[in-house]
Image (cartoon, helix red, strand yellow):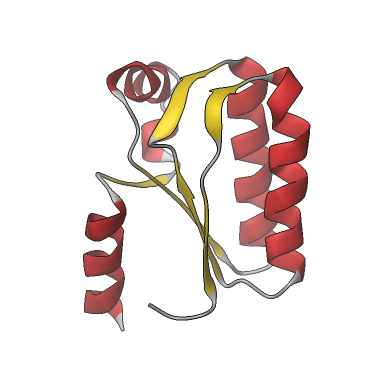
Length: 108
């Protein structure tokens, strides 16, 4: 995988208490030159509206820099939130990290 792909793995609940630190971590990766950010949500049990809002803000920032912002490994509860808010049509979502890597290899 390219060194310009950076993976971030938040844990627990992505809510207002975690969203700011998570956002700062992703912004630091973007400033460091990451062309693709992969957010691996395998260890996230729940996302509230502020967590979802943070993901949207980060997606917009990445796109504004002409970078990619992808998500993988979401659980059923998070998937339902994405579907109810139609965010599943906004984000590039992969079943898991292997599916992301396979898709990116096909593009290369």
